[in-house]
Amino acid sequence: MLSSAGNILLTGSILFTFLIIYLSFQNLREKNFKIGKDLVYLSVFQITFIIASFILLTFGFVFSDFSLLAVYQNSHTSKPIFYKIAGVWGNHEGSLLLWINIMVIFSYLFLVFNNKSNKSYSLYTLLVQNILILGFLIFLISSSNPFFKILPVPLEGLGLNPILQDPALVIHPPLLYLGFVGSSIYFSAAMGAILSNIEGKNFASSIKTWVLISWSFQSLGIIFGSIWAYYELGWGGFWFWDPVENASLIPWFCMTALAHSVLVLEKRNYLYNWVLILSLITFISSVTGTFLVRSGILNSVHTFANDPSRGLYILIFLSLMIGFSFVIFIKRRISDKFYVEPLSKETFILSNNWFMMFYLATVFIGTVYPIFTQVLYDTKISVGPPFYNAVIAPVIIPFLIFMALGPKINWIKQKYDGLKSFILILILSCFINFLIFFFFKSYNFISNLIIISSLFLIIHSAKDFILKAKTKLHFNFSSFLSHIGFGFLIFFIILNHNFSKEFDLNIKVGETKKMGNMEIKFNNLKIEERENYNAVIGYFNIFDSEKKYQKRLNPEIRVYENPQTLTFESSIITNLKQDLYLTMSNLDGSEFYNIKFQIKPFMLWIWFAALLTASGGLVRIFIKK
Image (cartoon, rainbow, N blue to C red; front, top):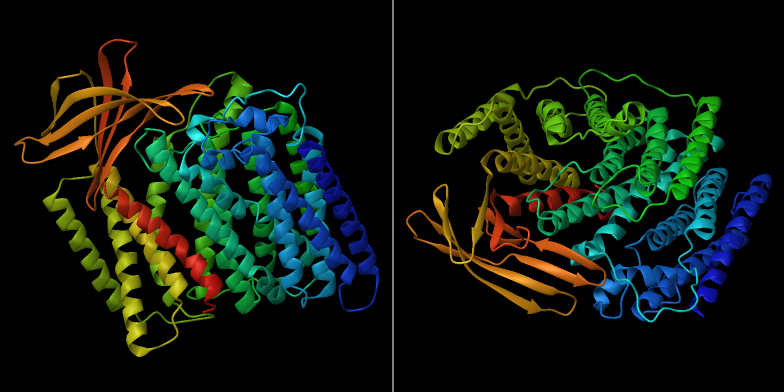
């Protein structure tokens, strides 16, 4: 029943998409200035059918309809309802249906909210967006159909991957998809702008909000994914430069550059071609990341079950998308102005773009380089944190200084008269860094410079906010939130990096062992039966050297039956100063357990600073200042 209904809805979605493409061509030939109502009606039918198909698949998971292959492979009757719903997008087929839903929703909203824009521009945007939608719908129906039926119907499902059974993983994928799939609309809008030859300022105004929406959701998606990996995977950090993490970060760099460049285009009508290129490569980089993940080329704890044939389809689709978009871009040759004064807001925004492109290139090379070494030399290598830290860390320093100065600089041209303030804030930043250095411990030269530059950004942003609040002058509050949030983020990350401690030891029940100036006692071990798994729980006490305080940590080894999987759950005590982080694993059935105990300073502040940074984009959407 669900299978038939689902396939009817998907077929109907394809039909409506075909009709929207056809009528868009027809409307382009007509000389009136309004988009035909038939296109609006078709878009309503399209969005209704595609959302209905997603709701139908959700019902299949909630009510355990194992006649659907996707439900059978990714759910189980014993799963809590929360994780049954997460199973909808916790697999390739369901996640692709979510991808298409987001594309259709953005297509419909763009048509509704940009109905006063240039007619040919709106129609070309709708046309390109629906060609993309059609390509993904064909992919869904042909090789990734979530409504594929199996006979005979199994009595029970295989279950959801245990590491995906977590509250953060319920919201992380939809947030991330709203980010990088949402970028499809300004890819289409860029193609529409090229084909319709719309003025740069009008193009910038039409995509600015969509860029902010996708950037904000992409940022939130990355943050929640980072939080999940921190406590679920047992690695004990906030970022691991995992290839699939990198695949989500690369579009974020493009979005950040684009969000700044759009301001120049809207205000000064400069950088039109550059904004078009950024609009194109943001979505292209999103599809590239999808290809690398779904094809199985990248190995990661985040990847879905892979199928090379699916990867080949995405590669062909990606190649065609890149080829056609850039051929059209080059042939149209949109005229552009590209002159900026050395000391102007335009220059500082452009410098932001250079930094973003440098970070993008670094992460992209670090991610794909192992693929080439394996293909060319049959040698497996990994590119990890040492590479990224060595390349990116020094460049962070001037970037933070430019972030601090940029918002204070005026458009067109300005004589910089804030040298005295600059020197005073720099001295104060150096003094605070010296206090940290003096009262805690030494760290390397680059770390000193990063802390000073992050403090410079924080203090400079706070000073501007206070001055503007006192004088009641116009102030960009969203920019302030994002910039000061980013300053705090880098500040707490570098402190965390320098002051973290890790202890690795083997211990059995009843033993006490010393770790630096602390002691750990393995008190007891219990087994508990939970709703979805059995848990082996360790009971540990942590003391300081003088036994003045005691902390209790209870890491778990979880044994899942559906599917049969072993996971290692961390136990974390969080306060404003630091996290105490403990994981345990059994040593080949012996009485000894391997314990990894970590002290992670300022973790709570890292999450807060990241959320503060992302909030700037959300504020900008609703407060047009």
